[in-house]
Figure 1 (cartoon, rainbow, N blue to C red):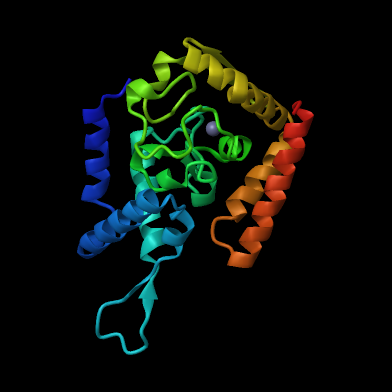
Figure 2 (tube, rainbow, N blue to C red):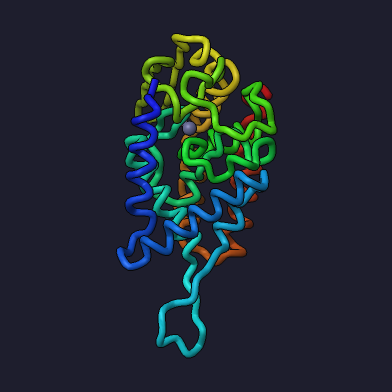
Length: 256
Ligand SMILES: [Zn+2]
């Protein structure tokens, strides 16, 4: 289990560099802190709002141009979390692809149920697209939805929280990949690990097997995801909807 001290150090490391440019670090820190505080105090989901936040570029700026500082803070957070997680998904431990939409930020306690933690540092992790879509806003905890304080590592309960415990202490896995097939077996070692296997990883390994063991399908999805790196906004939405629908269909085949 990670200690509170370790979690605080991880957060301090993010806050030391919440923006890629040195001259914007102070602004980014202030914007992050204000949004985080408002989210907690008002029980308000501030994630989407932060993603849209802009600031005026410095003078001279006769046209009043802005820069998307909120999205840039989220990009810095994504880089920080990828580094912390060894570039692997927080749930299934597969490698994360180096495309923003293929490594979504996962809100461990969902934004729907726990809006007050929408920007809580310990509530954020990087998941792969499969895990993020599969978990959606499922609530695995019994934590009071009006809780003001984020649970400490010792209070996490009997569900797997990817930021508080250490994965290896809870789950063992074997992943074998050959030229044309893939198989992943997950085994829970603790109550929390068994919960994640039962409620989540079992499905993920079935989906993985269906994708990877069908070369045409997995090849098509990889091409679609790679093509989604830099398209126009509207195309991106359509592409995401299509890949999402395809994943949904696969989940149904996988039994649920
Ligand atoms: Zn995953």
